[in-house]
Length: 276
Image (cartoon, rainbow, N blue to C red; front, side, top):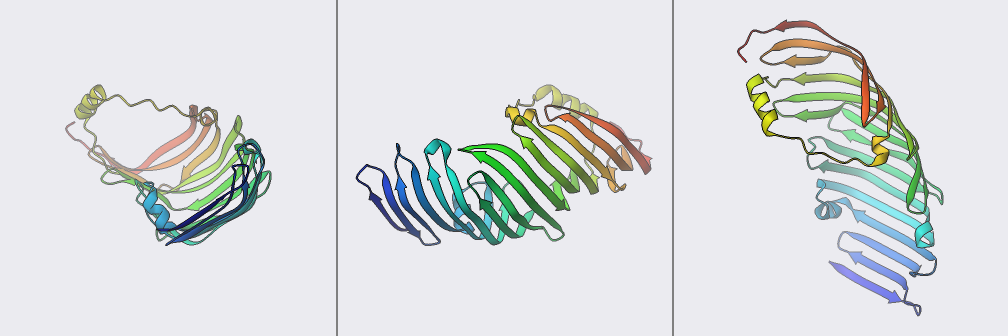
């Protein structure tokens, strides 16, 4: 719901666009022509609840986001100068059980780079995350990354099967053709409780074939140097065993052909006798 006013210039390019809706605002002023350089001032104020209703990715969202930027140059080589800000955002994504809250964002746009000054928030009641760094760009293409993630107590789970709580410290560095993911992932705690039925698993493997997913080349070539460790709080408890594991691994190689080097030890557990 709202009002739209669009003014067309003598050359056929749009000159001004004003859109006011019930839960937001979009003002675009300046010139936009297919053949000439762009010169636009964009101000967008969006209530995240309205955006969530238009995007299937979000189950629900709250908060206010503001994008205020000056866009110049030809379409194939646009330059941005401005900022994206968010205050007290909250999100819940489809397919992921955790909730993000108290999300604050300050992303600055320059003619040659995008700087993430702050993108942080809470994950459920005990977790948190912080993303900082910058991405270089030229035209509409990203040419380099230097981004760091610092998070605590990130939960990954599947009911009646597993629950893992992780604290990653990761950095993505390099150019698209030569990029590296480095850092560490601490397993704070974990549980795997799904029973193993060999006959059923064999039948399932015979009947099902995993679909092949084609990854972009830059992801395939992503070089890895990630340490995975824990303090012995990962437990496997099912019809076969009841043990705790201590992990000290290094993941190297590329995402398309990675290797593991290190040790996984079991302790303080029992091996069960069961019919498979």
